[in-house]
Every structure is written in structure tokens, then in C-alpha cells.
Image (tube, rainbow, N blue to C red):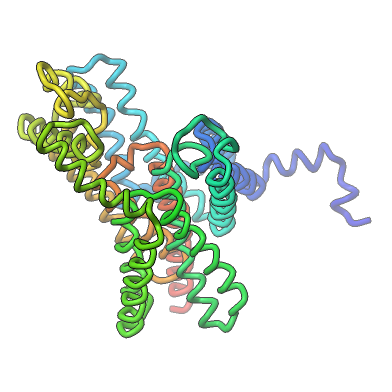
Length: 425
């Protein structure tokens, strides 16, 4: 019997209670549970997020954290939350609406905390693997629900969507599909054909689901951009041309084989005509109306905006005497930049874009973690043209976790390289 086995349980627990490595492992465990639950449950995601923060406390080094938060990639997420909090002071909305609107920005504070944690933990890849496993399970469930809608975990009329909604599901599937391109390419170059084919088949499964089961117009626009980023960074130009031609051919086949894809794309033109000619309140018409009004609201208070939580009140005032799409009252104009601009003006927009830029710069290097982080930022930026994905629950958490975990691992690598260079000199 070894020495660890002879150690009394009380002594073992006392030693682990005072062992920072044990607390880091516990925090990682709750993060794995968090990402496993993200595609399925908002409540569990929040609970495990709180558990992660609680288990960070015993090994938290305030001085080290203060030093790490001085980086631009840490400063700007916190600054955007601070703008949202301070923006309550000049808003005319009821205090309940102001505080409610601060909430979606609060999760951005997690970004520097995740940086701090994963500069000390080596389990970032495990967390991302857990998210992939959860999304594979969701993919399987989506196929079952497409076959038998009664198997859905919620009452829904969305085909092939077992829980939450097709936008969240498409965001998760697209991120996994494109993120897998990097390890597939690395395995093929290393001669590991079997694992590469397996991961490639999983990626194709995600794409096929988005084309034939749950189709998101936003992802139809964002995925080509994400793939183009991968091609430009990791492939030769001749290979890119071949892939571009193959992708165009596959897109044509998908168009011919998927009536749902045809209907989704054709609906853009038909909905626009109905909105333009009759003011009908449909998806396209609503967005155009939201954008038009939001731009007007922004010009009325361009420097610091109308304040936190002011969007609903502004749309209420603009809807008086209107009909159709013009009478819609919303809290979210379905565009991240306009959402920020209406509430906090140029101050908020500059902070938002500084955050995106600082995170892009963080992931400009090579390696799997840099690729995942870059992909998360690119996806969030382009899909935020049509939604407020920083402030949405699912997509916002995907951004915070993707940037925070990958960023912490990248920063850890930078620190190690700096120490090795200092030792060599």
C-alpha cells in the first residue's frame, strides 16, 4: 500500500483544501460542466459559472490579477461593462429596465478572470473537447427530433431543434465545424489519417445539419467568412482556389437538394418586398425598421447615447400611431453596434470595437488555441451584424468562454517563452 493510500481521509482533505493545484482542478471541473450544459440549459450554465467563481477564491492572487488585467485584452471587456453600469446614470428608463440591461454585459468581466485562471491551468483543451462532445450530442438529438418532433425537450415548431432555438444551435454547430478544420489539417500532415477522417466526418455532420435541418441565414453569411480566414491563415493559395471551387460546387448541390435552404434564401427577397410595399412585420422588415430607427436614435445623442436600458422606451415613443413593422417595440435592435450606439453613443462603440480588435491581436499567432480564439472573435463580429450576440446569453457565453480560455492558454505560452528567453540570455 502506498503512502497516499495510508493517509487519513481528514488529513487528505485538509491538504487538498490548502493546495492551490487542487482548487484549480476543481475550477476546471466546474468549467467543464459549464460548457457541457451551455448548449442545453441556461440555468445550469449560470449555476456552474457561479461555482467556478467560488472555487477560484482560495487560490486567487489579487496582486497577480491586477497585473494581468492591465492588458488591453482584459481592460476593454471590463470597460464595456463599466460603460453599461455608468450609463444607468443618464438613462430616462425605469431603474428596473436600467439594471436589467446591465446584466448581459456583466459576463464580460469573466474574460480577464478566465485569462488569469488558464495562465495557471493546463486543461483548456479538455474544456473545449467537452464543448465539442456536448455539441455532438446535440447534433444527434437534432437528427432524432427531425425524425420524430415529439422527442424535442421543449414545445417548439422549429424543425430539428430539440432545445433552445435554431440560431443558438447553428452558432454552436458552425463554430465546431470550422474549428475542427485545424486539427484535421494537422493530423493529415502528421499522417494520422484515421483520426482526421473521423473529425472531418463530424465537421461535415454539423454542416449538413445546418444545410438540411436547421438553417440560419446569419450563419449562411458568416461561415464562408470563417472558412476564408482559415484558408488565408493555414493553406496555400492554390489549395484555397481548389477548396473555393469545391465549396461552390457543394453549395450548388446543397441548393438543389435542400428545399429548406431554397425557402430560407428566397424568403429574404419576398419578405423585403412585403415590408417595402405593405409595411408587413416580418423578419427582414423588422430588422430594417429596427436599424432605421436605431440610427435616428443614435444621431439624437451621438456622444454618450440615451443611457442603459433606454432602447425599449425609445421604440415605444416611435411606435405611437404606427402600424406593421413600424409599430414593433423591442429591447434589442438585432445589431450589436446599434445596440451599443443607442445606449452609450460613440463612447460605447469605440469601447466595443477596441475590445474586438484587442482580442483579434491576442490571437494573431499560431497554434490550436490561437485558432479557436480567432475563430470565436471572427464569428461573433460577423454574426453581430444581424444580432446583438455579445449581449445574448448563448452567443455571449460562447464569446466569453472561447476568448477567455483560449486567451489564457495563449498568454501562458507567451509567459513561458519570455521566461525561456530570459533564461537563455
